[in-house]
Length: 539
Image (tube, rainbow, N blue to C red; front, side, top):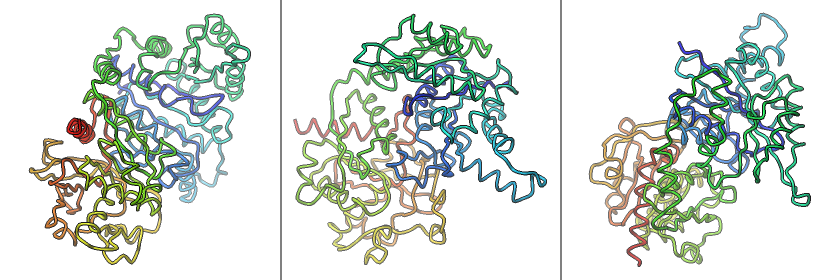
C-alpha cells in the first residue's frame, strides 16, 4: 500500500486569491512527474452541500459522476487533472456535524460529552485521510476554504495541526497562499498583511512550509528575504504567483518558480522526472493563437455572476482551442429578452447557448431567444432547462399548444410538455434529492448526437427534477422535433434535435461538467464548429 503524502493549501489576507487554481496547478505538475494525485476541498459553510445554494451566493454547483453536488473548485480539479472526482473530494462543515450528531444519536460515543475537540476534529481528520487510505494516491492535496482567522475555519486548521504532528513532517506540509498588495501611492509592495496572516496561522499551531504570494508585480529578492525572515521559512520556499493571462498559464508559472520541486523536496520524494506539459502547452498555443473568432450568446438568468456558469465558460475555451477559434461569449440576461427586442439582443450571434437554471424567473426570455434562433436558423445548444425551454417553445409555436409549459413553472398548465419525474413526486426534502450523477443515454444513429459522439451509448452527468413528458412525444416527432437520445432503462428523453435546422440540439444532461483541457467535450467542439460554419455562410 502506498505511503500517501499530504499537502494542505491554506489562504490568508483575502478570499478569492485562487487556492483552487494553485492546488490544481501543483497537482498537474506532480501528476506530470508521474505521481498519482487527487485534490479535495474542505468548505467551512454549514450547508450539507451547495446544492440548495443560490448561484448568486456560491457560483456554480458542480456535479460529480457519483452524484455529489459540490463546490465549483472540483471542476477546476477535473479540468486540470483529467480524472474524475467524487463525493469524497468535497467535505463541508454541515456534513461533518451531521455525521457526528448521527453517531451521537446512535450512542457511538458511549455517553461522552461531544465536543469540537476531539470529536469534530477526529471526523475532519478521518475525511481528510479517506482518499489517502484507498491506496490509489501518492499525494492528496487538501484545499481549506475561506481564510485563516475565520471562525468557521478554526476546526479545520486545528485538524491540520493534529495531522501534521501525527503524520510527521516528511508526510504532510502546508502551502500558504497569501497576498502581497501594491500601494500605488507609495509605489511599493507591502509584506505586512502576509506577516499578519502567517502569524495568525502560527498562533493556531501551524507553521507554513511554503509561501505562495499572489502579486501584481515581481517580488524582489529583498522582499523574499524579508518574508522568509519574518514568516519562518527559507527564501527558496517563498514562491511568486504573478497575475496570469489565463488560469491555464498557472501550471507553467508555478513550474518556473519551482513550486513542485520544493514540495517534493519537503516530502522527500524524487523530483528527477521533469513535468512534460506538451499536450497542455499545445492547448495553450491554440487557445492564444486562434485562426478565427465566433460570437456566441449565453442566455441565462444568473449572468451577473459569471461563476454561475463556470464550467460552460471553460468548456467553450476548450472547444474554441480544439477548433482554433476564439469564442467571444456574450452574456445575455434572459429577463431582459422580449418579443420586441430579441432580434436586437441576439443580433450578430453565430450561435446561442441557452443555459440551465431553476424556477420561473426569466424563462419567457429564454423561450423568445429560442424562437428567434429556430426561425433564423442560428446554431443552438440548450442545456437542462435550456433543452426544456426549447420543447416548450416548439409546443407553443409549432404544435399550436397555447399555454404549454413545465409544471415547475405552472402547476396546472393545460399542456404539461415538461413534467415532474415520477420518482420525484413523493420527495419533500430539497437537498441532494434530484436526479444526480452519471446516467446512460442511447443515441439514434441518424442524428447530430451520434455524429458528435460516434457511439450508440454514452454516459453524462445530470442535475434535474423535471423531464420531457413522453405522452407528447409522437406529436413532437410528427411535427419535426426528434428525440435522438433516451435513457435505455427508463425511456427518459435525454436529447432533442431539429433535423430541418442547421444545428439545433437540446440535452437534458450537463455536458460542461465533463469537458477538460486534454479532452474537450465533443458536444461543445461540434457546436463551436457549427457556429464557425454559420459565420462563414454569412460572409
